[in-house]
Length: 89
Image (cartoon, rainbow, N blue to C red; front, side, top):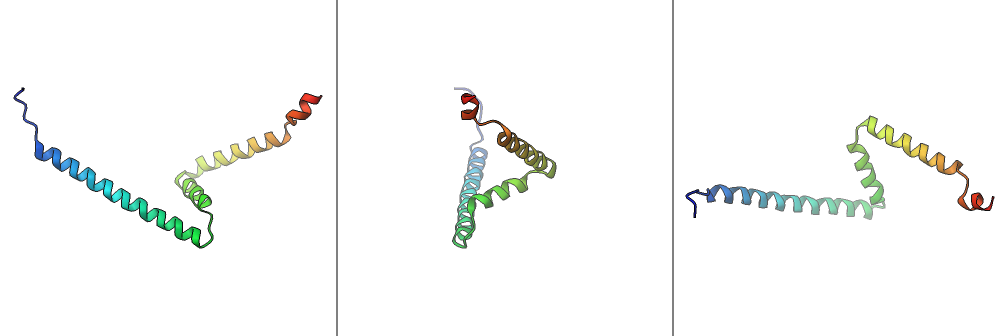
């Protein structure tokens, strides 16, 4: 074996801190689920709430660009000839 000393106390400290953070994250995740359940019980659509949260994380320029592209693609689909009609022609 080598003469390298491994600082076990440091390793334990890191591991315990990470374990504590994991436990805190689990608790926060449970609290988040409870809030969504409460919102659902009051008649709100959870999928829409999640979409709002996702959009609020984006900056305004990114959100504007996404909305513009979405609108462009939707209009392109609506004005494109139907595949069945194109095959019949």
